[in-house]
Length: 416
Image (cartoon, rainbow, N blue to C red):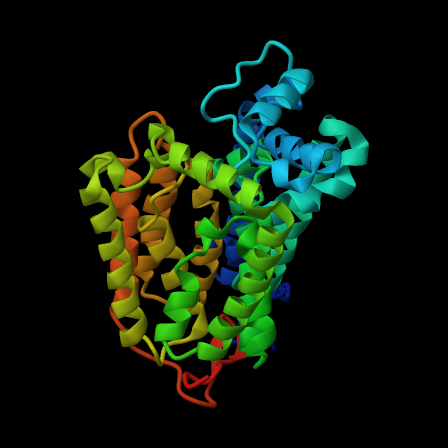
């Protein structure tokens, strides 16, 4: 007797219709199938976009592996090993070694080793590979750090979660950062580890992990203040102790002479337009007004931290990173790499769909920042910051377990 309906009803010729009948897929009866098809299509698009962007961004490195910022860090490490660490910020020694490594290359006002000493210390073990070998080894470590940060912080579950990693690797600022040998991926990992450790109730270890972001402190500078104002004082305290230890060791190692040279280089760096091109100075000029505006952004971010003091940690971390980016007084296009982590954590807080779509506008603005101007980037990031200042409609409560995209996470108590 023929069935009268249902997914297994007989077909038009009396054959029993399988639940895998392709006609059901074509008619929309398999939403999971279409989601998988869409995800696969997006993955291929991101792979192609990433490959094309990487070919363009890494073109200078293919011609000369020393045409990166890591060469300057290598110079600092070599000076420390050969002349003493008190001389790593000596402009004369930097110029001499740079000329040895890259004869004929101009030693412009952007060719300075300005990073904190711990970054040079990290390069010391790689210096045995030579400057080019050090770059390739550093790039490998940076990719591993990015993958680890993605594993710790990216939202979602299953294979579709890989789209976040592919998206990051297709984004121009992040690829640009990799091509320059910047330490941004290490900072990304340090902040992601801090968030994850805080999520599982280990605030002191979380703060210590955040302290390791001192290799490039300007990428997460306001985050500890946001956490402190939001009541997560244990994380902020551990960060302060870790940072103080690293700063103290640095001052002891470089001594008064190195400290004086460092201050001179920092003073010079603030007068170079390129170092402030992607800050509010682009709109307000390099004078006092731009510094006041940056301070105002930080103040607004801290007000948002207070208003969101019972929000999920992911929201607070995103708030801290975005406030840092918009309130910076020394910032480059590659520094927007940190917003990849901010986007992952922002998404975890389950914002409205229209706010999630805004992330695409931020991505596009950063992609087109060179041919257009920094203004769209500054505007879109400011709007994103406004989203986060408004308190979350469903704040985390002490002891509450919230579910983000199918993955239960225990929120830390606000009164840490």
